[in-house]
Image (cartoon, rainbow, N blue to C red; front, side):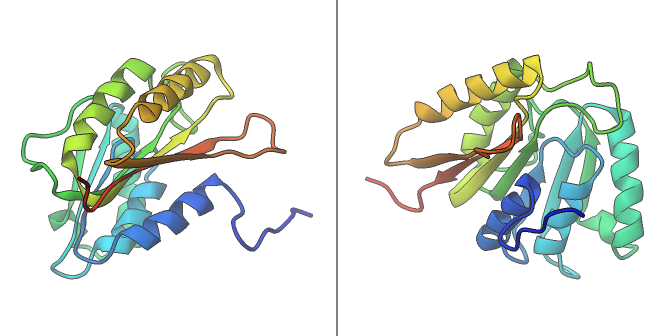
Length: 200
């Protein structure tokens, strides 16, 4: 029988709890690596109403966008497309249409596409490019949420680069932390980077 933990069962439960604390209906959010669409759906459930909220969802792999669209179609109202932008692109850059300081939450679920080619993974170099752009897009008080997978070689390097990047951010402007599992070998970790509402 599987163990049950009331506070959080997995790294995704923990991430979703934080997301629910920071966003509200009407916000604009980004899923920078949509994968199979589970995080995109969660973001839609948190910020969309009939005429409010915007979700941008990106992935470099066409398979991911197709799966995400099918997943959203099965769980959302039929006219969700008006408020959800699905786009095939690398997370190293964001569309010009997204204005600076307009996004409440940017989500990264790194690694490889579940069920896809494990050789195709996110890489530290492009993720760092993305994070530097994300700094400009996040609203004061907004959050960058990064799920890292250090259980494979590229993922371990990527996590190391992300932690080094976050450690160098100005503490008056940014609050950064990492959640790790102490008794689960090679479990994913969650990095949260929050922008100050006000700083001097």
